[in-house]
Image 1 (tube, rainbow, N blue to C red):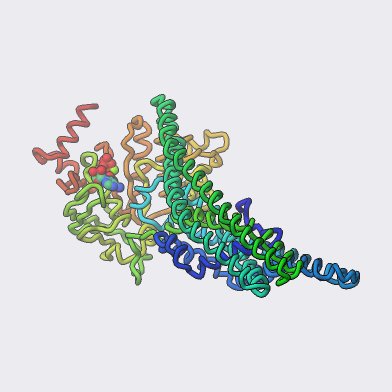
Image 2: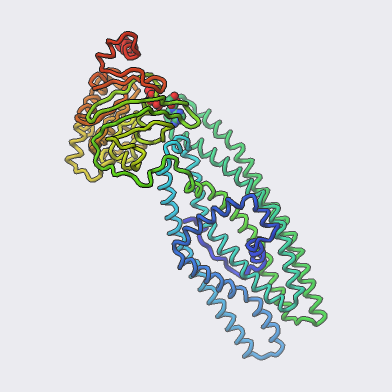
Length: 617
Ligand SMILES: Nc1ncnc2c1ncn2[C@@H]1O[C@H](COP(=O)(O)OP(=O)(O)OP(=O)(O)O)[C@@H](O)[C@H]1O
Ligand SMILES: [Mg+2]
């Protein structure tokens, strides 16, 4: 939990803040207009925020009730001062002691209730914050491939961290500071207006003037904070990008260049942070000035009333007590408002993730897709990447029979990986359809669809965990015997055995401690263990040595026996075993046939590529 966490305001009442906040809540024109531009954003954030708090509405209600009671009790201190001063001249010890005892009891109860409120607030927030974090995590998982392809992990992490931290601060600022101060203001307003309406009016007017001032300043503060957050995300981007790609940086000896890049993004970061600091000074000076004028007018008025015997000395102590304890808290109110503005901005992206649109939607009434034989049909498929490659697939029609193996070959950028992404429904098609066993893949859930496919990606990425964990990722219930059988089939068991910790060897972040060929064989073992109905293998483009290549190919063909298989191959030696070879070029299927047929075809792209590769060897 944030160390600021849920703090209870200690000390005397905060009436002036209360007025400010109340006026805000009552939507007094000027202040509301100040927030007007940000209103939809703020309302949306509050909507999501309170939806989580409302999941525990009983505790939330209790916290609000306790805040009201404790704030009223805390606010009564000046009233007891007045009683002391009024009763002191009578020299009646018993009366004075009675007042003192009541005062001490009130303070003790107020302190006890404050602590209880604080504790219940924590109870409420800890659960609500973890619920939110889990939902955001789930949402990020659910988001489309397109979102993940364009996201920046660094800025996403910093947005989530900021949002998460603001979760507690926002609660504290709204309920324990502003709400509290609103109540204290009413208590003060009640007592002072009852004493003399002019004193009440003088306090009301200065609070109103403060509201107007805040109206002018807080919007600027929000705008600067937004700019700063963007600059902060840029800094975070560069740092995370460097940590992830540290190998490339070292390979090219670009440390100095990367440091300069970081320094570069620190330029706007410093400027906006400096501006942000300056905007606080505006608060300090303007609020401090108006506050002093307010205190002067109120005390001047009360002194005159006391001199004219219109109020007692005790009454004057009451006014002085309230102003002394309440006015200084206006600063805290302003800080609370400023914190709220900052928290809103910080939470914008965090909660914004929950509202992020999922483009590739599951059907509302998904068809049952538990039994899959594995016949795949691409029917006149057109697809363009949004804001990217136009017609990455252009009228692709292809039938893959159950148990057949298909090789996709062709020039780089021809659309091979895109075919697989479309089959896994990472994207929706522009037109045409893809069917598996005569069922349109958009009519089943994405999770169900993908659970039938086993993919060995072009560049497998492993979890920072043991080899055993990574192989068992798709089927955690597998026994050790099955695990070893899969590893043997994937030609990786012998290697694992040579490691001191065997299957318990850690593979490092993204699998960095393994070679490219080893990673791919771990990915094949993982796929074998998951026992999918359809197998997809995106062959690595990096040049493996012939022995590793053979190990991988043998492993793959063994695993794909009797299963519908799509292999994307760059080395044509890999594809000779395939039942059918599909040659892709510029998003279209250019040629289809067996290895022999395509070689016999004069002028075929396949023959050209084959000649190129065989002659090179
Ligand atoms: N996420 C993306 N956004 C925009 N364009 C993309 C995206 N992914 C791929 N492309 C573009 O779509 C085209 C087809 O890419 P694809 O990855 O399918 O090629 P490929 O045939 O698998 O190539 P390779 O043999 O190099 O792996 C390319 O021009 C590529 O730049
Ligand atoms: Mg590819």
